[in-house]
Length: 335
Image 1 (tube, helix red, strand yellow):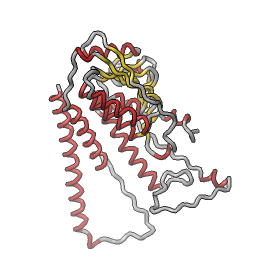
Image 2 (image 1 turned 45 degrees about the vertical axis):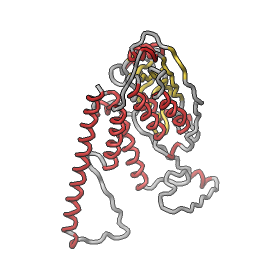
Image 3 (image 1 turned 135 degrees about the vertical axis):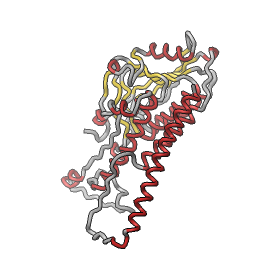
Image 4 (image 1 turned 120 degrees about the vertical axis):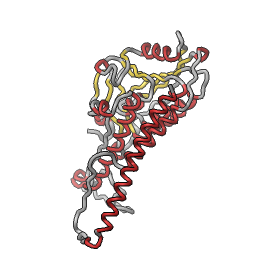
């Protein structure tokens, strides 16, 4: 089975590399044509605003991100899974609340230890989260991929696995959810708060000393420039493509199928059986499904607890987030 999956991943990597090569050849050809017509070049006045548009396909950054993602998946697939009846213990790892660096600091090492712990036969990720920070979510997701290559992993939610919470869930072998659990919110969120008028009304003046025009990009004391808005949108798009890739890979769906659910909204799990979730049920349903994958009739349950993080992302506008937008209202600075 691992050889088949490895072949599929290599096929995707080859496809992406061919795309990158095509972009390089096209860029080289365009550069050559520009050099041929350089003698007819007329300098652009200093006060002229120059814009560039990219139409169709993926940007170089998006392609590079996809290649790295596929390589990570390939490395995980190449690991050997060893499940025997002698290690009939299930480790339950909770991932509750907002996912930030503190969450990753606790969860990632735990998953790495479980991957090498021969006494653990399978892992149940209990996810109750609206999502969180991009870096933390992706760190946990990649740890889940590595863990899954060593032993069965089932993701379960009784209430909510949205955005980054769902991103992590798709790394598991199977997803089990309560019928009324909220699933989805596939997308990326960036929020910028502009308090400049509030500062002015209260007589607050902000003086900024910076080394570059965009060093304070996203700061609440000023508005974003058109150029900065474009840069942020590009960043959000790259993160979004990575999210789509993870869901497509984890749920064995085409990109077009995944995009149908990438509207940012959530649905009841009962309406997603066979697509974003595998089965509906309660915690015991998830345990039974994991026991089936472990090929055991009754497993011991061991809970791996860690301090659940609070609202510690700080300024929500400082980064692009895999976060359910409804949760913004609950954060400091939210509406």
